[in-house]
Structure formats: structure tokens, C-alpha cells
Length: 303
Image (tube, rainbow, N blue to C red; front, side):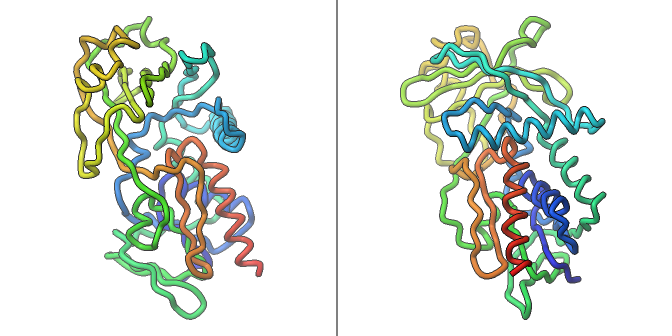
């Protein structure tokens, strides 16, 4: 098989890049549903909050939220809840969405397919080889040649090219506390604790509302091989003092994945026509990231 552009990976960035290419009028695009690394977005919190000190992050996250609202208004099936953030240190309540990340990815991929983007299942992608006029994507179930290749496999990019940024483990602790009608209205609570912070929010999980706890820089965990239940350590680290209603909580489930540390997009051209695109917590900014990646590809094709 041969295409003009191969987008490898059908997660948030891959699906958004395929959509962005279709919007830019680039033809001959194939979205490769290659497997590479843990699909972190499937276990993400789904939080889309554009209250940020960084103007670039603010604009990118807001663009994704606007896209979701417009698509839902047009009849798309993207499940989301209006769930404001309450920043306890700032004393501010700001608008935000909590969305089903898989729904957004499926919608972006569907829009790309409607515009002519084709799909190819190559299985696990094991290599990218140079060929005359482009590159060969090698999978354990097939190969695809393309003039331009965009790697969007999350941390799986690092298995194929030299990626200059670090990885980190992300975990969310689904708690066994009941979520009744009153608790269902809880905003996304964010509190600083020591050198880090904790956040508590309500999220639909398997069609039930569950209370979820997350943290940054409170408990170190370098084990990237699987989930570890740190709830007791987090409570002792100050979470129980800031959120007293969690003192009797237990862990019902741990949602986890490995993601990039850097939460601003990096679009790297490793050799002519071979790009990798990565961004930590990509769901919240995937639409403009895809547009940027598409613009980089279009520039190569036009040269």
C-alpha cells in the first residue's frame, strides 16, 4: 500500500491530525491504527479546563472545548459534563468540561473518514524505514509506504525515533465513596499541598458516577510497569487534611498510564518528511495540536 501521508496512531493526536489534514485539503491520507505503548487517554480524567497562567495552553484548551460544544450541538455523540474547577488556593470557580476522551477521538476519526481519510490496521508498528520518495511504516500485520509520516503513538513514539523529552506515570484513584445527587454536583476541587497538589472530582466510569482522586508531586512513583495504590500515603501526605471527606475512602480501582511530562506540543521532524508529535495530557488540547501537525505536513508537501 502507498499513501501521500501516513498518520500512525489513532489516539487524540493521531485522530486530530488526520482531521486537520482533511480540513487543510490534503488528499491521500491514511490513518494507521498501529499499537504502541499504553493508550493513556483511555484512563485520563477527561478534564478540559482553560484557566491557565500560560496563554498558549489557555488558547489550545479553549479551542478543544469550543470544538466539543459545537460538535455536540451538531448531534455528535461526545459525552461530557459541565464541571467547573474550584481552585482552593486562588478562591476562584472557573468553567470546564469533563469529557469522555474516547468519544472525542472516535468523532475526530469519523470526521476524517467522511472527508476521505482511509484506515489501515498494521498491527503493532515496529519500525519506520527510509525508501525512495518517503518512508515505509512496518507493522507486524503489514506495511505502508508514504511520502510523509506522522508518528502519534504517545510514548510509543520513543520506540521508533529518538524523542528528547521525558515520561511519567499518571494515576487516578477511583474511590469507593457513594456519589448521590448532592455529591454529583461537586466541582473539580484543586488544592495545593506542600510542593504538589491534589485534585478530587466526579467522573462517569462504566456508566456510573464515581469520585476520583489525582495528585501531582505528592508521592513519588517511578514504577512504569503497572498501577500502585498510593491512597493511604496520599491521605497521610495532607490530602485528608484538605479533603476531610476522603478520610474513610478506599480504592475501588486505579486508572493509570504513562505519558509525556511536557504538556505543550512538540512537533519534531526527525528526517525529511518524518515527524513525531507528542504532548502530555493531549486530550485537552488535541484539536489545535492536530491542526499544527497538519500545517507542518502541508508545508513539506508544498515544498
